[in-house]
Length: 228
Image 1 (tube, rainbow, N blue to C red):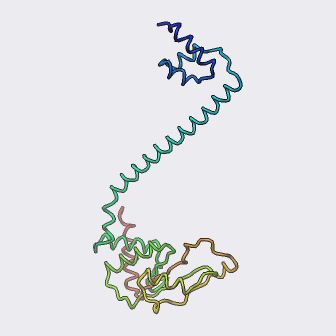
Image 2: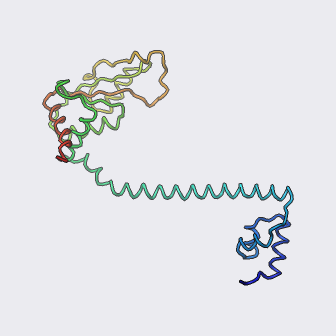
């Protein structure tokens, strides 16, 4: 085992007595940190020197955390980009008339729609405008639709303006206001202020056809038989 030159040892001791950290000394002398640690072992630091090293350690920790956070952010962005590239092809489904699009529409209805024979007309409700728009887009593209058979009812919190909400959902769904039923105020929320300004109530889209309702229901239920 090679001995550490006396010159390096003396410099290490001198730097340590000045309050430098082991990492700083190792860098200045181009010597492994564990070697420096052995050379300066036993040298006592003053209170001020210890405080300086403590603050430096905290600062380094913050820099390390910031760097680690940035590295993690980049990794997450790369991961999301990879997943997005694998799933982009599915975005075309909603824009084309196909059996796959019908299956998607039926599956949505199976999850959120009113079922036959409990009801005798198509009813699809949700508070998420994206879900309503997607369902209507798939319905209109893939089935023979009579726009005059659409109806709509908005159910909302008591302190919200029903007329304003009706106009909002009419514009979003493309269903004329004349085909909207009177809005429903939820009396359970009376006296309670709506804090979520983005909440626009629940939109229940109806289509006056038992035939289409049952067709969608059976299309959706066909997924149950995939493993049979």
